[in-house]
Length: 111
Image 1 (spheres, rainbow, N blue to C red):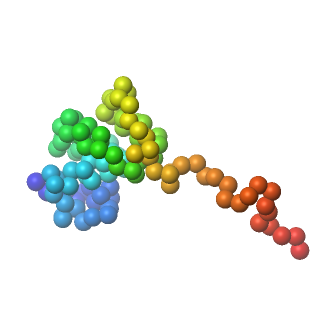
Image 2: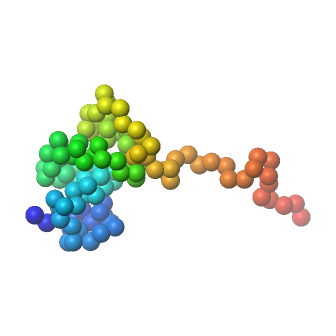
Image 3: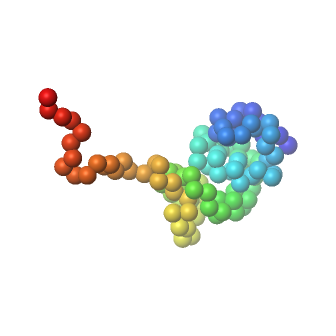
């Protein structure tokens, strides 16, 4: 079975025509869980069993924003009672913005 072209926006790093829905399931499942809309999630659950999706999800993929990681874990996959190390999933690029200059340092100058 071919991965449909309509999934290209979610699977942007690879041409979907080159993906194999079985061999590339790790990438496909995680990308759709992170970035997919309702229609893409419906496609995911239609083509992979919930057990397979859960099995793949439990293989860390460090690309989840924190809120999406917990939404997928606790609500989409109902894994509330399973302890999963968020550090294996949550990327820092989606984390809080931190001050980059030392406190008291001003980037503006008086003229």
